[in-house]
Picture 1 (cartoon, rainbow, N blue to C red):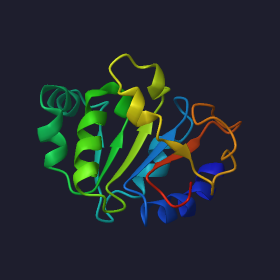
Picture 2: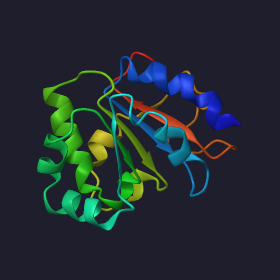
Picture 3: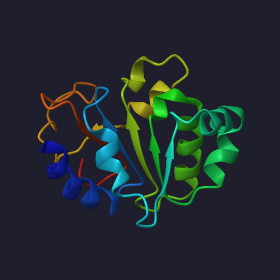
Length: 151
């Protein structure tokens, strides 16, 4: 399974990258892939949960401020979080801060800061590194990094 092949690549990315994003269509295995990182010092939050999503929408900065290291599944459901993540990462660039998933091309969401997402680069340790980040692999998953030496 390709998702299992991505596990060591994501682990490596989390050693020097503040934010790692796994993009792919629904049912492609994103949640299964990232859940394995929860419990190893990373809190797991899914924005499929209505209460978590409402909290993220009501106070994105407060929601992120209370997280040290987190897996945030389906981040496209609360795009306001992306600016809050940017702010906290600008202040604290420790690697492995956030592992995000999205089943949507974040660049097409109306409330997303295009200038920040323009910095996202597909991982060079992922076979898609020469493709535009918003294109998904034939397997359905793309790993994108922000602020990594793997770019």
